[in-house]
Each structure stands twice: as structure tokens, then as C-alpha cells.
Length: 244
Image (tube, rainbow, N blue to C red; front, side, top):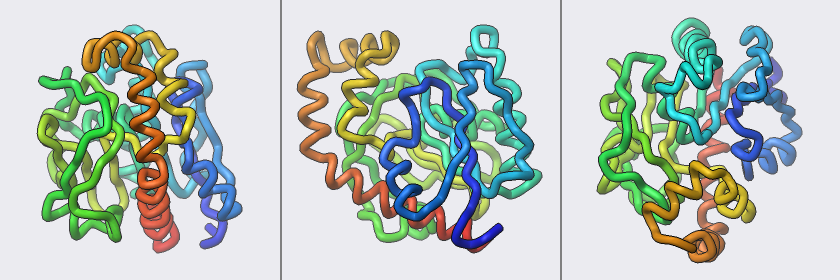
């Protein structure tokens, strides 16, 4: 691997849940990436050709294997990447849950679904973790999930928590990280996700009918802050990739 040109593999589960603002950071750094759209039946390539794996969010749940048969090979690929190859890994929302499930943790419906601009707090492990270096110990983020990691995998560390979700971020070893919330958002994210029926229903159950416009406005007010946090996480993660 050239330190300046790592090869990033991205698993997507719906076209509009992509790396978001992280794509801008990759372009600025001259780094290409390969996207596998699993929900469209695209095949997972040989992980040998990549230096890092990102797993994005999606409206499905990790236990819906019958409806989404690609979930099993995706979990296999995550295990191969993290355990066998020790590849740097970054998971977002569903990707966070898939990492936990693939490594032996427990995922289920959230006792209290989280949707909106909410606060997370880093744990002691999070405050000393490479992935969160330079971030405030407590900060706002965008949440949109109805499932959660109920039990972390054996050997994993919980890096962040919120009032209603104890496991907001995980680390497995020194190269695999995941977050339940969304750091990758752009100015279009909330509007685009609001068009997904499952997300729209979750939003209205949590915040009431017609909540999308207010959610968009609240997100826009925080977007510059969120993008700064995203850049810091991206830089921290790519530092892990280059040290590998």
C-alpha cells in the first residue's frame, strides 16, 4: 500500500446511504474508493485488494436475513476483515450493528428509538481512543435508529453512550471502530432519508407528523459543526490506515 493512496472498500445497503461528506474528504486527499451496493446484488470482492472497509447504514435490520440474504456474506466479510486481516474498519449505524453482531454481540430493537439532534458522551475508553482524538467529550450528533447494540462483542470497548443508548460507539482492537449515530451527513441527508418509507415512519412515530421540515432545519443549523467532527474522525481513521 502507498501511504498516500490507501484503497477503501465501502459496503452500501441503499443507494442514498453513502459515505456522504466523507466522499469530499477522499476526493480532497486524492483517494479513490470502491462501492459495493449489496441490496442490488453486487458481489463482495476479494478483500486482499483493499486497505480499509467502511460499512454504511440502511433501513433494514441485522436480523432480517430472509428478506436480505446478502447479510450473511456481509457478516462473513466483516469477520474476515476485522479478525483475519486486521483491516481498519469503520461502521456507521447499521454498520455499527453489523460489526457487533458479526463479532458475537447482541443487537435488537431499541428500547427507546433515537431520532433527532441528540447528545452523546465519550466514555473513558472513548476519550483515549485514536478515533475520537480532538473531539469534545460530549457533543451533539444526528441520530436516526430504531435498533441498537444491546451487548458489545467479547473483547470490544464501548467508546460512547447516550441517555437512551448505552453503546453508541465501539472499538475492537486498535483498528476497528463503529458509531451508532451519523457523522457522514450532508445538507441533503435528512431530506433524502425522509423519502425512505421505513425512515419516514420512524421519524413520525418519534417526532410527530410533518416533523421532517423541522428536522431538516435543525440539522442545517448544526451542519458545519457536524462536518468538522466528521473531518476529525476521517483524519483520525486515515491515520490508523496509514500506520498499518
